[in-house]
Amino acid sequence: MASSMSLTVSLFCLISVAIFPSFSFAGDPYVFYDFRISYITASPLGIPQRVIAVNGKFPGPFINATTNNNVVVNVWNDLDEDLLLTWPGIQMRRNSWQDGLLGTNCPIPPRWNWTYQFQVKDQIGSFFYFPSLNFQRASGGFGPFVLNNREIIPIPFAQPDGDIILLIGDWYTQNHTALRATLDAGKDLGIPDGVLINGKGPYQYNSTLVPAGIEYESVPVHPGKTYRLRVHHVGISTSLNFRIQNHNMLLVETDGHYTVQQNFTDFDIHVGQSYSFLVTMDQNASTDYYIVASARFVNGSTWERVTGVAILHYSNSKGPATGPLPDPPNDIYDKERSMNQARSVRQNVTASGARPNPQGSFHYGQISVTQTFVLKSAPLVTISGSPRATLNGISFVNPDMPIRLADQNSVKGAYKLDFPDRPFNRTPHADRSVLNATYKGFIEVIFQNNDITMQSFHVNGYSFFVTGMGYGDWSEDKRGSYNKWDAISRCTIQVYPGAWTAILISLDNVGTWNIRTENLDRWYLGQETYMKIINPEENGETEMPPPPNVLYCGALQSLQTQHRYSSGGPTLSGMLKFGNVCLMALLGFILYFSY
Image (cartoon, rainbow, N blue to C red; front, side):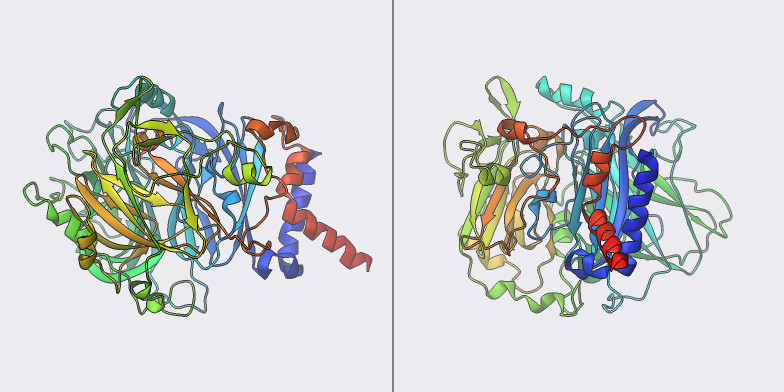
């Protein structure tokens, strides 16, 4: 009965989009996904291990949507621990309730389901999703998220002959619970066991480094065709250099914004970043070609195995790929090489993005900064006997309940709105300290990396302008080097060790938004905070209310109704929660024909 009712609701859901577009949120179409998150056994590096799958797939299926679509993802938690999915780069306009982090959502307990519903307002580009709790991304659960342009908005290049999605990342043969225990014990994770490309291990390019029998990714292409490669770094902490043997890669987009188009033979991609390249199949196909993602900024001899290798297979290929891999960058004595490459990524100011107006129509360089925040990361410290990572000397403690939910239910002491705007010379400590930001402000954020490792920083709910980066300590005179015309707008940026990166953010999106390192080890150990942005004249039009299916936890746990599902299928309550939109459509359907 549950299955048939679920099917009925789903059918009405689909019918309603066609018959009752007025029931669609903001009048825009819906796309629907059911995600069942579970464990499966896989052997990506030749050793059986438990990985996290989505609908039985590792990596998970891709979400395919178009600008302004409403996305509904019904998530079933078949894991043995709490779960949240997050959608980095998806801005959740006015709706941080769907962001999928502990500061915005209560977790989905095991054997429960919960439905995300959000609009991808005024966005295009290449993103991915992943589980945000308990180091779970180190075991999988990730997948691509593609936002297509509306037909009325041209893309700034000829329509490619196909899309190719590549998820790259460093990988351990231990699962996330074992890695978590290693960090809890105060130990370093050590060198990863390899690099995966689309959840698969390396092609056996070297019989000493790569054992036989490992499944590898093969990408079929046709000669003369041009493909858009969407490359996402979904890994743990290792920066990767990406390259394709004998092929140029024309950079065209990153994190949802079109770039100035330029060719690269190799490109550094850091944890959490997404890039689009156009690659033309212009070789003679005497053999297949290597696709390589290798560890960057490391000792080459000891890290040689940390290399992912896939195969680019022409339809007229005359044989398998052989010989050595294409060389990685040789810049041991040139620490500016990678940073100069990063500086060269600039915004295509004449191209239209999600809207008809050019991307460069927002003149960020002419706006006065209202506040500056310097966020300093440092090597691990010991707090209460445990290793912790910090920003401005504060290691973030996850809240017992979402920040805005605590506000709306008048829960006192759930967090402190006192995150410092710059580092102070004081003893590091752990706290729930949140950054108090001003709605409609225009802020400058300096990420100062005094740690010894490369780091990526991400800001949820926003894209920001990357105006500058350099080695040493940031100071106010560095503003003279800022790019104030065509700085790339994106959501995740690398910060080199012993260096700084400056960004500008226009605070027009109310809610509570996470600022974090994307390096999983540092994030797990507390290197994050939240930015709270509230309209003081809130009238219900700038921030959405909590969704009808909001989960409660912590001091608000008593407000939560039972919401399990059985192994035999979804419960009616689960379907009702899934069917917020669908039930409205069903009601409209009944009323329409009754009338």
